[in-house]
Image (cartoon, rainbow, N blue to C red; front, side, top):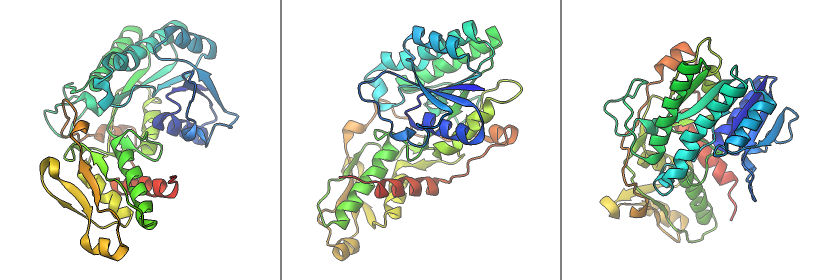
Length: 351
């Protein structure tokens, strides 16, 4: 079998490649854009594997997508390529739609024309639910996005349905709730927290001053899982008798504040919250400061510039159909996820 994965330099693409190289004998093609300075840090585990090969392509360029499908004749096309940062989508809404929605149409059209037996996966998002009407959110929850990113993913979901029903393609749109990990991009809030904790940990260890981590809304609640658990679910979605969309989630919700608390706990830094609203801060405890001769005290502070124009306050998934019908369930707990991320960033911290 031949499998194309887009977004190979990102978290999900790299984790998917590692999973497939371990659990199949298939040939993997990782699609990447031509860039003057690509970052291959997430590809270290497989970049020299003889069953893996980079190919150049761009979701905004239909010619490159057509050529890849026509020349490789893939059995599977797993699309993790995206403008995936929600906060940035207000600043570049047209690019977000061109990559996330029109890009999916380009892939589906190329598959329809050149390899209609290819099975296609579209990476959806819980941000499609947006201003939620009920919890937990299941597959029938109304589409109510609150960001250009969420709207682009909702558009992709509809395109997959149209092509599946119009051309009898095996095309699925998996709605994945928040998933993180050690390969997560540094612009995402969870990685920003874990790397910030690592930076502060080493400053304290070396008796140096440190700047606080600056964040926006601490009360937003998300359904967090580890990306490594989700790629298995994606592969199971692609290998059913008939195509069907599923939700993958932990079926739990936690606030950003909880994530922060856990992160500092796993770094063995004792901290206390104080203040209210935009003046709220997290500081080292008095006892901890005295014991460790702390040079700075504020660990986390609010910066209003990180508030979104429209916030999604609560996301909580219902992945029971996937658990029952695909025999899938996450193995890594919320606590374990936070611990893994903090440990990785502490161990790999560079000044």
